[in-house]
Amino acid sequence: MQSIRSADCPSPTAMSFEPQREINGRADVENLVRTFYGRALSDEVLLGHFVELRFGELDYHVPKITDYWDSKLFDNDRYQSDALQVHRRIDAVYSLRSEHFTRWLQLWVRTVDDLYTGTMAAKAKRIAAQAASLMHFKIVGYYSEDLQNMLNTIFGG
Image 1 (tube, rainbow, N blue to C red):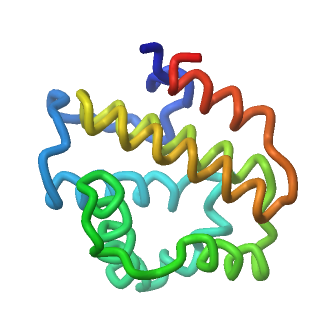
Image 2 (cartoon, rainbow, N blue to C red):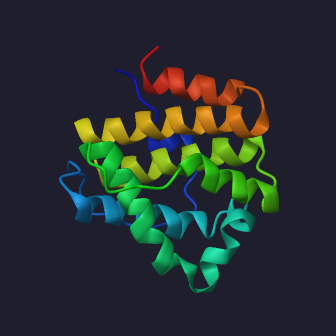
Image 3 (cartoon, one colour):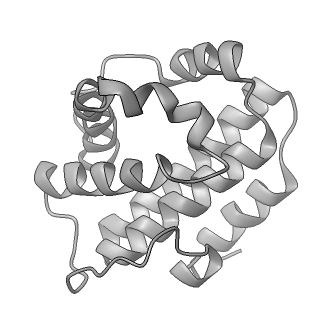
């Protein structure tokens, strides 16, 4: 299966990471989420949409997002919120556009690739691509060609 690799998304920082390994549990999921948000908070395309997290909200937000990814990756019911509604609220304030969803996915894929490998890493990228494409459709009103291409690449199509 072909996948999007780190080279598809320019590095927002010159960080060094430990050797890659499989995502094995909640601690790894939290590490992935924290690393991703560290990057998103300094990304020029995403910064405005995450600005509230820069001012003390990140510690409140990370456990919820970790619950979301833990639920998706390990098939449990930790996450009880509606992710689409959360993003609709963000859109009402900050107007989400195609480039935001595309950049979010590029950054997520890069972060996964930098930190992890294996079945769960591939699953994290597939879930992210599906979620980004669906949310884009439901919020923006049409399917993004860029996201569809990324989705096809992740699924090896």
